[in-house]
Image 1: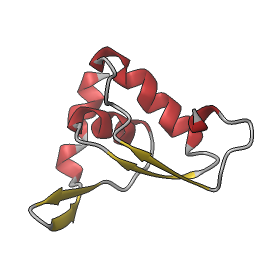
Image 2 (image 1 turned 90 degrees about the vertical axis):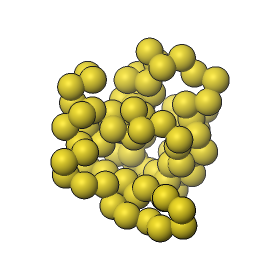
Image 3 (image 1 turned 180 degrees about the vertical axis):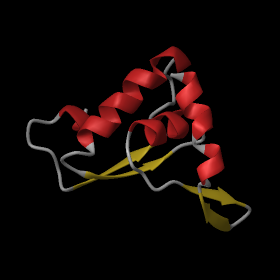
Length: 86
């Protein structure tokens, strides 16, 4: 997996990493993504609000939500929900 590469790329695009993964593994996946973001710029697409909230709670991130062709940044009010899940 590119997240574990000894030579991390400058940019990494990840499409729906939660697919085929049990939700109990989301915290570990979120930590892995955050660790990889120390070395690479990461662009991630996901249908899982839980995963994106976990990532956001672990590191500074920019989350954009697409709803019927409108993009909006995640609000500060939405961030605390993920912290409770940890």
